[in-house]
Amino acid sequence: MDKNLITEGRKALVSRLEAISPANGFSTNAGSNVRTGWFNEVLKSAEVGFPLIVLQKAPGKPPTPGAFALKLFSGFHVIGAVDVGVDDYDDALEELERDLLLAVMPCEGIRPSWLPLGCTGISLGAPTSFPPGNGESAASVIIPVYLHTTIQGILPP
Image: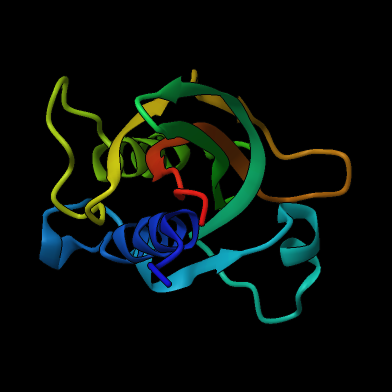
């Protein structure tokens, strides 16, 4: 059986986020603190640390049919968080947002080299920022990400 490209794409996205470090040309070292799961549950973890990146499953876009294939648009929320206080979080959050966008930046008509073959591209939704509040000291930014994956059909026996 072939590899599951949905799983391979998700794992490639996690690896790409883990590459965020100054040694790789980024501004932050947030790649050393990448988690998967639900953001609010990860924040409750005693050893969470900041800056933080969480990859959370999210609704995808409707699949489209192809020539004996299906093109999926698996959805994720890439969530970055910083905990630098309630007064001066803007600069730190914007620096992390920039790193996240650079890490997952789509290029028109070109498959990012970090995606596995069969994952044909990536698209983004609009980033949304949230200030600290409601009992949380962390500010966060959510970037919707959609991995484009072609699933080949199986011929009937």
